[in-house]
Image (cartoon, rainbow, N blue to C red; front, side, top):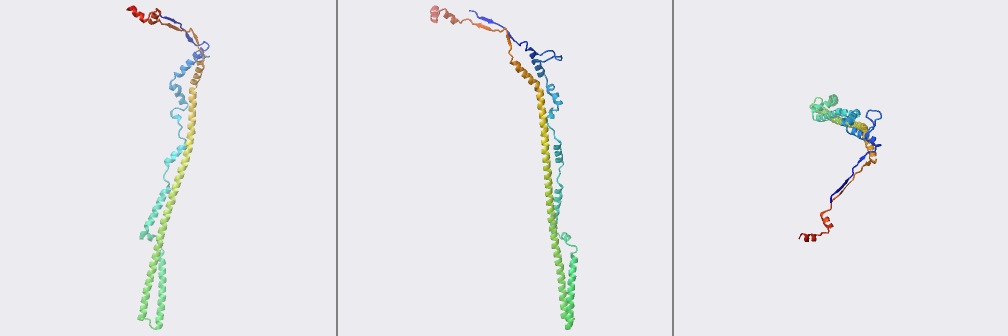
Length: 305
C-alpha cells in the first residue's frame, strides 16, 4: 500500500499596526522620523569604541589617567618637606658638646690642661701667705734676740743654733704653704674640669633630646598633613568615580531603553497566516500483510514444503 503525505504551508507576520515599532517611521533626517527597534539596534551595535565611548570620555576628562585623582597640594607639600628634611641642628651641636665634655675629662690627666683651669692669682695668694709667715718668723727672731741679750747670750753658739733652727722652720713652713696652695689649686682645677665635662655632657644630652623632640614633632605634623591630603584626594576620587558611573549610565541609556522596548514588543502576539501541517502514513509491514491474509508461519512452511 503506497505512502500518503499531506502538506499545508503558511507563515507568521507582524501585525500592520505594530510594524512601525519594529522598522521605524519615515526617513532619517526628515521631519516626523521615528527610528524603530531594528534600525536603532543596528545603529547602536554598529558603533566602534571611539565613536561610542572614546570621544565622550576624552571630552568629559574621564579617559585613562583622568579617572584617577591626582595628588592634592597638601600631599605635594608633604612630599616636598619630606624630601628637604635634614637632621636637626641640635644633634650636631649636642655631639660637639659631648665631645667637649669628653675632652674636659681627658684633660684631667694632662698637667698642662689642668694648669689652664687653675686660678692665675693663686701664686699671688701664696706669696702673701709666705710673706705673712716670714713676718711672723722675723718677729719670733727679734723676740729671741732680745731674750738672749737680756741673758747675755746674744751672739753666742746657743743663740746661733736657735736662729738656724728658726730659719729651717721658716723654710719648711714656706714650703708647706706653697705645696698646700698648689694642691688646693690643683684640686680646684680638677673639680672645675669635672664640672666642665659634666656641664658639656648635660648640654649635649639636652640638645640631643631637643633634636629628637623637634624631629618627632615635624614628622607628626607631616603625618597629620598627609592624612588630611589623603582625605582630600579620596573625596576627589569619589567625585571622579561618580562622574564616570553617570557617564556609563548616559552611554548605556539608549541600549537600556531599546531593551525595554524589545521586552514590550516581545509580549505582543504575532498573527499566524496559512498554517502548514504535514501527515505521513507509512505502508503496512510484510508481517501484517501476511497476518491479514490468514497465513501463519506453520502454514507457510507447509506451503513451501
